Image (cartoon, rainbow, N blue to C red):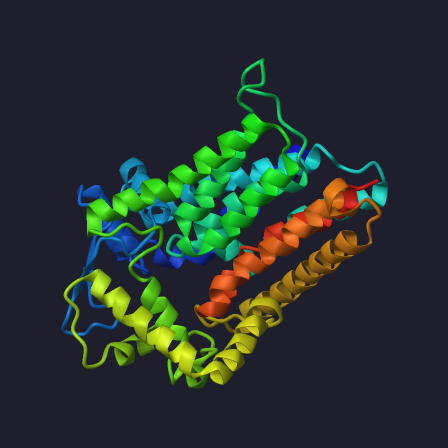
Length: 424
């Protein structure tokens, strides 16, 4: 049965690659948006993650970004090009299969604790397959150019290891190194190296592991392996761009996009549009010598606006929360019509049902379970999930929220519902 479940997930995903990407079959991967294409080209030429561009709205003033993007998306696309050539479809198929591996591991972890009750088993199987009927989730599965397309499966595996936390067999017979700790740390590193704004979620995941895992060596392994990613990235950033940073040199611009006098007039953007077209307005009258002067200028302007306009900021936050947690309309990517629009709307409605069921269930087991947070594993799972949702949302409430930013929560929400159902 597990084999059929995984086969269905893989089959639907590969079909989605064709449906979503066949129209781009002749497109060069070096033209991928969000700087993934240029940074992949640079990486293959041995120049690091460099992209000299005006696409950030610096018209007539191209800025060279060496620290503008996290490495995982460009590394995966570069690997695909090395193995399969500059073929959009072939690399999309490869990326989809590679990134499904952590998700399949999450499926296995749930399957090991499948409930005995017939109706509960049916519900768990339905929940594990439900995301593959949600186009917002499938877009992440097949997408090459957005970070969520790389973080979604690592996040699912990390959550599964926390919620379905029977320790795996130790690699060493004396228990010095636990496979569960290693897999968890690598999954968390994957989440971070795909998207720097997932740093709060990484912190919650690590704290969750420290609460769940009592063995000292497992805790040390996780702390060391997880810390290696931001430390290594900061060292790379200093070498490539001259500044130690665990984020990117686009963080200031992303903050300014959501904190400026025109934001409320432009957000949320209409279907098929984004806030990118307003980038030139934010740069008007300013020239930048390098990426960090660009970042620092926009960060300063955003913070000034936040301090001076608390009322407008609060109104914007309400809109962002609505996009993240309530809306069944897609924001921040291509517009859809006809049957595809109906599928998107139905899928987002399903996502909201699963998410709110998970949130409600987590809150219930956290508050009303007799054992309490400290001694009840299910209450602990509920508390970790609630904190994770808040951590995933926080950067987009401070910045700006699109539907894809919330979509990484689709599978964790399904896993939380499954965790409640497997409790006998």
